[in-house]
Image (tube, rainbow, N blue to C red; front, top):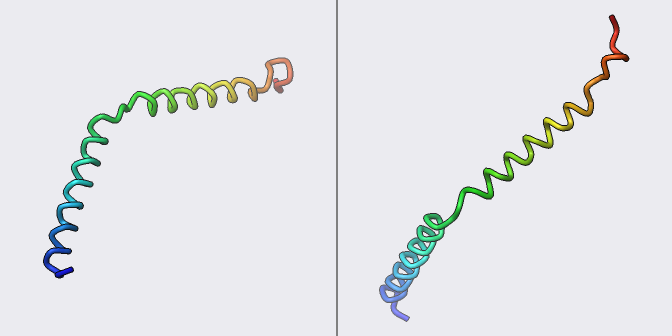
Length: 60
């Protein structure tokens, strides 16, 4: 295959892949990431509450 033809085919394929990636980014939802982050924040808060020393064991 002639190098110029090969280069042109690669440019076309590159443009198709970029367009596909842009469409994927535009349609991707950010909600799952927010719920994931909120979930781990609640887990961290729960662990802090569980590991807090009870009042009757604290020194006065």
